[in-house]
Structures are given as structure tokens and as C-alpha cells.
Length: 242
Image 1: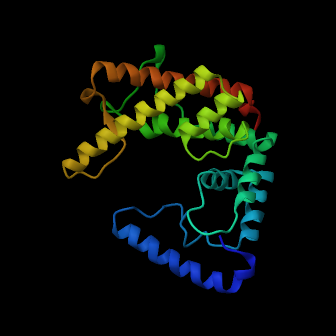
Image 2 (image 1 turned 180 degrees about the vertical axis):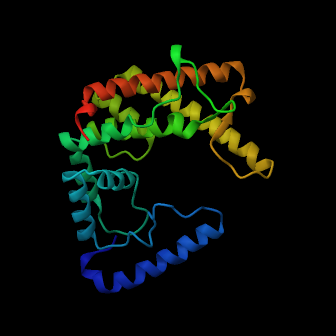
């Protein structure tokens, strides 16, 4: 984002700078975003960003909601251009019923793979911990953090803000945070082992490689995610929207 007064020069300079940085990061091993959310694509004057953000909040269609969710994690890294107005627009969306309902609908979409009696359902004894639980916790934290009026950028900070703001109970937010730490810890440990073995890292954790205690904690964490999703679906009546 750059100042509107620098529209001509900024529109030429920053895409070139972004291209240099993005290319260097790709060479260093950081994959390009499949969805095109790169600095080379999203390079606009601040007034255009304000227009984008307001449109996403006021008309939260699926594509607009996806973009709003992505930009909830964006933060300034350098320069003296104030982008606080963008935060205010998104946080203001947290008080918009339509925007919150659509966020809630997204947060309950990724359901944990649990069968009867809360047992884990796996394929070849493997579970994708990102799809099974991490993604849902991230989306729930965004929803309840934003509903509390927080512009926090990390999942754990959003859960803390939700607890402080009363949009989630202190116990519920704490349990979600514990489940998030467990799932991300399992994924990181798994990926480090894969990297050490020369294997391309993924999110598929094999249950047979876990201790009995880790399997129990994994099952309990995913049950909790499911319970919060069910509560969220009822609270925001997500079945009433399309």
C-alpha cells in the first residue's frame, strides 16, 4: 500500500520491488501462494485498499469473505504510511451481523473427522491435522476475536482477546488455545522428521507414530473443536444463510 499522492511513482516502483522480494523468497524455498495473494498482485494506493475492504465487509460474498479473512492477517512491516483505517474497517465488520454470520459459516465448514462416540476417523491411520482442526481453530479465533473488537494478528492473541471481551468463555478460549498448540506441535514435529528424512513436508500425521497420550489429547482436542463449531452454528444460525 502506498500514499495516493505517490500513485504514479508508487505504481511503478512497488510492483518491481515486490517482484524482487517474492522471487527471492521463492528461491529460498517459500512457495508462491496458489491463490495469488502476493505483494506483486496486491499493490495499490491506500484509497483503493479502503474501497476493497469496505466492499468485502458490506457485501461478504464467498470470494469477498475469503479476501477479508486473508487480509485480517496482514500487518505493516515498514514505512510511515498509516494503515490503521484498514484495521478499523475490518474490526467494524465484526459488529456487522451479515459479515459475522458469513465468518461463522466459514468457521464451521471444516469439521473434525470424528465418528460415533467421538472416535477418530482416519485413512490409512493418517490424519491431516491442518484440515482436521488447525484450520477450524484459526477461523474460530478470527471470528470471536473480531467480534470482541480486536485487531490481533495471531490465533492465540485472538483467543485471548475473545476471552477478555466475553465473546468466548475463558475456559472455551483456553481449551481452544491448548488444542491449537497441540495440533501445531504435532504438525511441526512431523514436518521436521520429514525434512530430516529428505521427504517433502505435509500435514498427514500417522496415528501409529504417536504415543497413547498424544492420541488421547488429539482426540479430545478435536472433540472440543467440534463442540465449539456446533455452538457457533447455533449462535449465528449459520443454517439460515447460503
